Amino acid sequence: IPFPIPFPTVCLGGFAGRRANFHPGTDASTACYRQTTTGATVENGYQNQAVLLWEAFGR
Image (cartoon, rainbow, N blue to C red; front, side):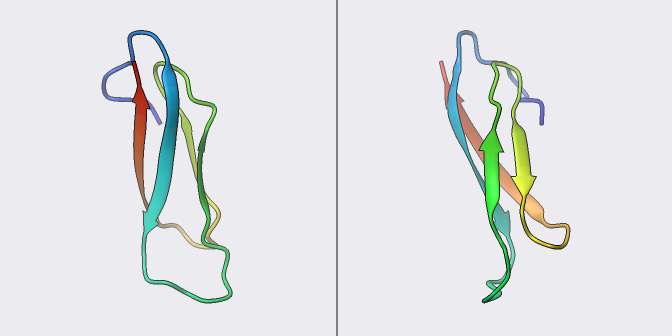
């Protein structure tokens, strides 16, 4: 995903989550990785498409 405003120096990290009901026994993980100053990869481990929420922080 591209960040709406690039970080001037560095992206220090990020969080990802999904908006859905809890389903016991299913893979419902999310991840935020490969951060750069302009974007990151946000991934959904759930079997179906889902709305993902994310937040990145940096300086």
